[in-house]
Length: 300
Image 1 (cartoon, rainbow, N blue to C red):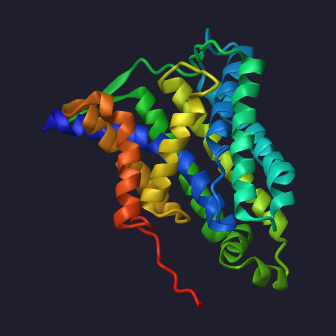
Image 2: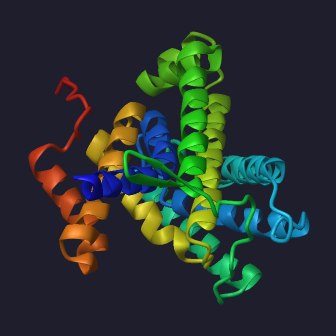
Image 3: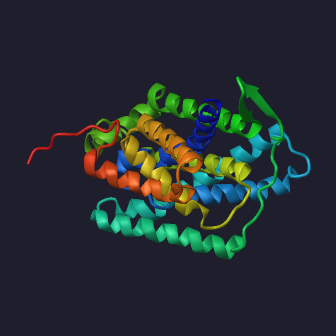
């Protein structure tokens, strides 16, 4: 039983990282009704920003919790700016274009980031610096909780609470929810729709950057294509939870992380990556709206 609980804890740690990425997918879809396939690459860029910032601050030799927060904030802000530019330059001009045009553009932006990162950062993997000392472990009832897992849980919970506050306790969040229901009505109510959409991209990109930092610290190997698999799995988690539903994306991501951990521990480890896509197929067949998605009636 202790071993099983240990696997659950490890899976929740990984699922928390998926959740931060999935939030960006689900928020953008909730407002624009399309999938930003470049989101996983924002996650990758955030990790690289953390790599260079951490080395510049000398944290690899002198880990510091304050240095970690500086790197985290810098990565989130820079990635948020990149997310804003992506929306402003690539997606906003196509706001009224056919959906397929936006989809092709999203794939093009993703490829631009991936191969641009190979040119800029190099194709060889890089070792992420040690931002904080995570050598200690804690035991609760025989279950080991590493310092890194505590960092992941703490940062993820704080960011999710902050996002929850923005969405449900601020005027910006109220405007975001209004825009997600109907752009035209939101405009009639005086809501600056373009600005709200840009803020959504900024928040989603910042969350993805935080996930990139946590992945870099947990699995210290960076490469330009690292965002592909993480992005796809986070997308599946968002669909599983109910694409467009913020809380559903979190639940779906946690279930995804725990399921993967159990498959590796008790099943077939090589099936770990395939599980996400098998889950996506099952969800699309039996419950296309996901766990918390709502079926909306449409007039025809």
